[in-house]
Structures are given as C-alpha cells and as structure tokens.
Length: 339
Image (cartoon, rainbow, N blue to C red; front, top):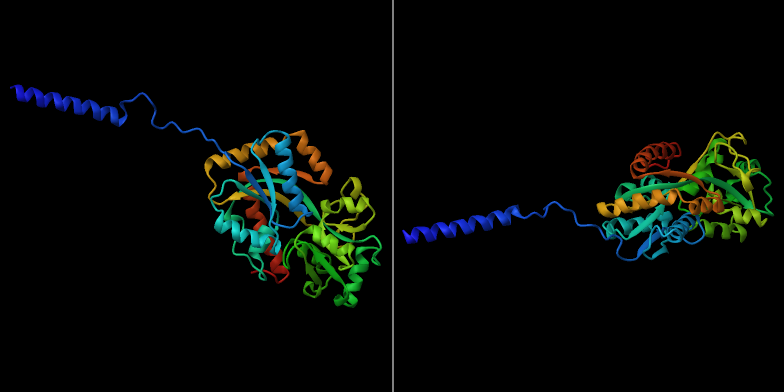
C-alpha cells in the first residue's frame, strides 16, 4: 500500500511538471520579440558614378533621413558603377539577397537591363524587394552652349545626312534608359534607330563631362542633372521628354511633342531592398520612407534638384513596376532590342 502511494505521488508530480512545461505559465508563448533593427550602420548604393541622377537621389535620401532624425543610425552612400547598374545588380542579387542593411536606388534601367537583348542582365526588380517610388523626372537632349546645333530638328537633319558624324552620349549602356531617350527623336522622325551613334558612360556626370570636353555632340540624360549647367550657361537643352513644358529654369524648353515627335518618357526613381528582406526591415523602411515623403526637408530637396514628387508605397510600387515592365517590353520590341 505504501509503495502504491509513492507511485501515485511521483505520477502527480510528473503531471504537474508536464502542464507547466506545456504552457501552464502565464507568459504568452506567441509574444513577438521587439525588433532592434537597424542596430548597425546602413548603406545606400548608387549603381553609377558620382554626379548622375542615382547618385543625387541616394545622397538626398540619406541627407534628409539624417537631418530629420528619422533614421539615427549612420548611413553612407556608396557608388558602384558599371553596365548602367547591371554590374551592381549581379552582385546584389547573389551576395546581398538577405542583407537588410544595404539598400539601393534605381529607375527604369532595372527593368530595361533585364529585358533588352544586348548586354542583358539576368537580374531585375523581381530579385529585390521594391520599397517605394520617390520621384519622377524626364529625359533631356542636351548640347554644349557653343554647339553648332541650335535645335533638335537640326540634329535630326544631320543624322539623316550622315549619322556617323553625330555622336550622342549617355550615362548608361546601349539599350538602356539614356539610349532609349537618345534614339526616341530619331525613331519618331522616321530614322532607323540602329544607325544612331551612341556612346555610353558610367553615369550622367561622366556623360556631361564628355559633352563639355567635346567628346560628344549631344547627350541624353535626365533633366534634373543639367539644371546647374544650364544656369551656368554651359549647356543648351534642346528638348525634354515630358508631356508638357516644365516650370522654373526649364520653362523655355520645348517638349518632343511640340517639335512634332509623338513621344514622351518618364524617369521614375525609387528605393529597393534585398529579395529576402526581413519583415522587420520591410516595415521599418515602409514607415520611414512614408514619413520622409511628408517632411518639408524632403520638399526642399525636391525643389533644389528639380524633381517632381511621385510617392508610391511598397505594394503600389510593385504593381507599377509590373505595368512598366510591359510598356518597356513593347518599346524595346518596336526598336528591335528586346531579349
């Protein structure tokens, strides 16, 4: 009888311990640990050389987040030029696919590089986590202030007479955004876009340097990158790819449509993270970028650079990119440059 009592006591103790171990505690087992992201320095990459639109966007983004204390961790900008962003994308998609501490800025080339035939990149926006669209900009056809070309139609006429004697440069690789903007006027004027002599540089800053150094007759770039050169009297902007005239310093520049060329090209810019970004990091950046968009400091930065605000959150930006992919495929197909 005594032995039976001892056995029952042991079984009772075992049962109590089992209940405690299986959740008898008052502490909720589903409580989520509070995120401490970001707990180290952050990097924002501009996949180009200094001076172009990506570089300026990355630096403005970092500057305003720091000034407003929206992000208190140290943030640095890193330039990674090569192939109009394709070189960086290959590295990022394979080596940083779960690196929450490295973001990058991009624009239509992330789609174009993945869709074009020549110099194709196997990596595109689907190898990232789109975070937000920040701005929109437009393409511009630019010559040096002392150029023999007084207007865009005179460039078209020169191309018709002998395309080998007109060099057009851009800050991205053949078949990419600057190239598409460069050949749009010729294409819409009935010329075979393949005859246009296009020279590529790593970033808009290098393309402008080539123009001012007489190594190009005209460059194709984004309008916001040439504002300071226009004010200084170093360049003339022959046309802009917006659907209507811009304001401010650009109010006297005609659109392609005004010049009889039925074309326009919008250059959006946005922020991206790694494909396998954690939920904590994604939530952090969605909140911070939306807050950034609402600050007067960001408005001031937009005005200083001649950018137009065009904010889209992560979900809307991703949907927008899906539509853009279809449109760019159509354009590249028309030009015989699709993959």
